[in-house]
Length: 400
Image 1 (cartoon, rainbow, N blue to C red):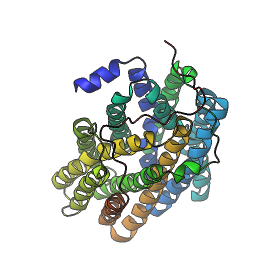
Image 2: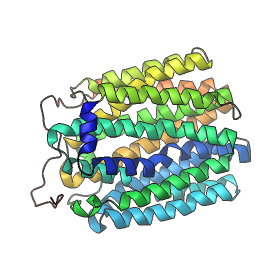
Image 3: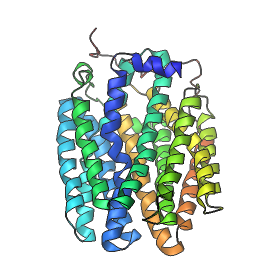
């Protein structure tokens, strides 16, 4: 833990990590909040899954586009513009009852205007700490991200079941507005400039590590989105048990990230970590009782944050600094498409086979992740510098 405490004492690290965590917290809330709200309005998990798919498709399109905009206009203007549009769309979904088709349109607008905070902060990180601290920093960031992806649904579940689905969406909106304002106020956004990308959009996917991280992110987050829907369907809208199970999922992920996530990356690291996720998710469907689901999800959670830390690290070590924002944008796009497809498939499987159908979807996604990680192994970074490859032109960095 001392390693992480020292990192948080580094100038700018704690402030950026805290603000981006708050700003991105709706990423772990809105998928489930939209699912519960639209299902309640239209009495169909399938319809709700379509809205989630439209939202995530918008986010997937936005990812690499807005990250390149940051290299042209700067991080702060792009984030403020996109967050403003996104907030208006989210408020509309919460406050206006619409047909499924209109929900899909507004959800798409909310998705395509998703502010690119994750690529921005991960582009800044290598300029804040020495190269030897970068892997632990990505591990800490991955653990923080699991607060978003796992604790976010817990908060959403409790608010939606105990207060209302509309209030759950509005709570996510508050996090979006407050967190974005805090993040864009950070001076590091002015002191670190993302160089304009020289190659065409998508060229960075030609780097095997970026493509691997994007594909595994798709499968990992898809599995998480499916299991979240399955847990909620298992216990129903009025039962707090779903929140308890997802909270334990979160504890497992945080524990895994803090204990194992900082370890050096070898070619089999991703396969081992995805294997832990698969074992836990596959076991969760065996007994659909709170105690067993909680134990199984804790095991699955232990692999999540370390897997994400490995993805971020191999990406950082494989691209030029001018390409880092776009690379993380594509990884985010992969995760969002995974969330969309995982949620949509889970919704239809719940309608057809009850809650256990969503558990099947989650296990299949996780198993596919293990296969991909085994056959397309990442680089061996043991003893290597994980900082981005320097560009050939001068890059403006933090001032002392």
